[in-house]
Amino acid sequence: MKLENNEIAFLALCNEYCAALENARETERAEFVAAMLRLLPRIYIAATDLRRDDTALSDAYVADALEEDYYEAVRMRVAALLGEDDTYLEVFEQDMKYSDTPIGASIAEGLADLFQVFYNIVQTARDATPELIAELIPELRDDFANYWSRTLCNVLRALNNIQYSTTL
Image (cartoon, rainbow, N blue to C red; front, side, top):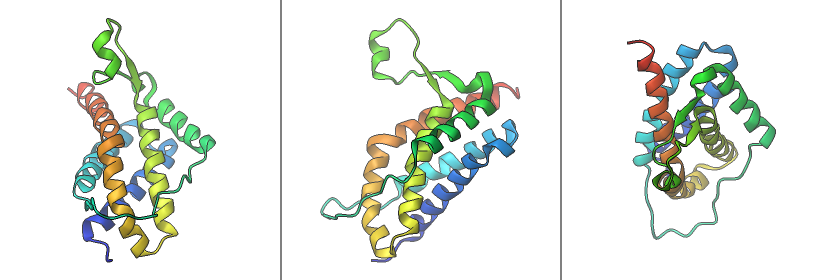
């Protein structure tokens, strides 16, 4: 099975995202926020266009390649870069329905969670044949729909607030 152009683009965007987070220390805050605001919507669109295959049964899976220490280092770099703007109010948290207390979330943690997903995808794809990657695509689409799409949208909203509340 051959990879479609969008699937190749999705993998490239995941790789670009990982590089941006790995290089956050060498990036100015405004430049980093702007880069995330360019990348995240493109990743979202590419992920929504990934192939679905409800009938395929495959043993293909995305391996856990990211070590906890590396995850934490990336998270801390982004938190340091964003400073006091790292925390935002999470309005889509299930517990929020039953609470009078605002629930805070961390942009750095959300970006690091996405980094973990994308890093694992990139590392798995790096060592896989195009056929194996093609078998992974429906799983990636399902993971997007069931897990990380929400994280991406929430972090995007918070980053948008940083970008446009400080420049108005």
